[in-house]
Amino acid sequence: MNTTSTRQKVGFVLAGVLCVGNIASVLTPTPDGQEGAPMLILVIDALLGVVGLVAIVVAWRTGNRAAIRVAAGSVIVAMLTGLPAFFVDVPVAIKALTGVGVLVTIAAVVLMLSPSRQPAPALT
Image 1 (tube, rainbow, N blue to C red):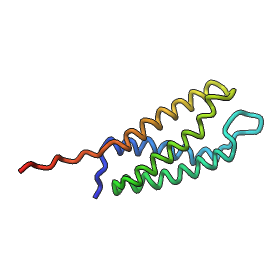
Image 2: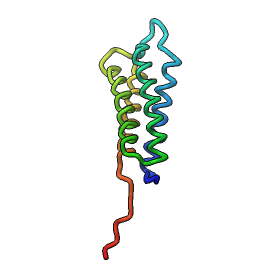
Image 3: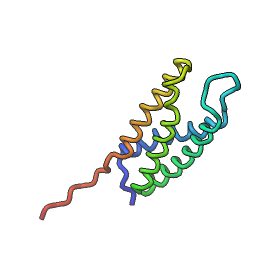
């Protein structure tokens, strides 16, 4: 039985976009001599993206709370791999993009973990 709310589904969509972005990032590595994430981080993010997408599909279809937690965990860990951008000398555009990613991650996690609305039991 699918017990996911509309809020959770919006969170799944946001998290799904983040996961697809993480998967795609491994296909466009940072060129030599430019600032950007090392290839190892891109591979880790891609793996987290695959895990997150699978968990999102399972959570969307079944409402499984464990799958929701796995999806949330994968986008959180992927977001954490980008945080060093705030502490190193990189262009402002990269810092801004990282900041937007952090905000979207927070919104996705809050929405995914919001309780599903179920009707209150009738008092007899």
